[in-house]
Image (cartoon, rainbow, N blue to C red; front, side):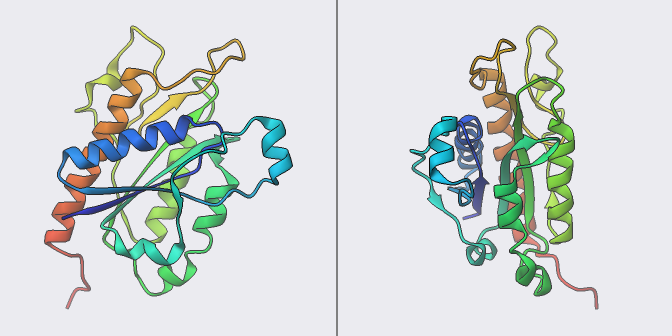
Length: 208
């Protein structure tokens, strides 16, 4: 069975919710999906004052376990158009895996959230893709066969680079992922799992 890791960081729960949808989609494709998060770097007294969602049940991932999966889908909120430092810190520890080609040929993807419609979703996803490419992974996005990307009747996330959501209602309020955004996340999980299964059936090796 294809094994998919949904690896995320979430301050307020939006990415956590999308991660659950991505995992649901992967399971719909017949894969085994595990949801894990990266360690928090912000001191506890700061997270409490800022209202971070601290009761997240997902286990904390380790770098050493990554080669055990056929696909890794990374979820991170945007920080000034780039991934959150918590996720970058975790990925920066993958040097040993890079050196030994441990992730080459595995499927990889990304999803994100921003506080506004133009808050850096695409730049964050593309920056995450850059890391996946350096690790030798096969980048899988959210294709336009998910027709929810084409909707013009509602404010919604969703890009060809990966699923996304908007975390602010425009008035400083907390907006949760919409049904369309969750559908996009499920579609991406399903799509990544199918690509990963195909790659696992014909592993990428070194040309002779």
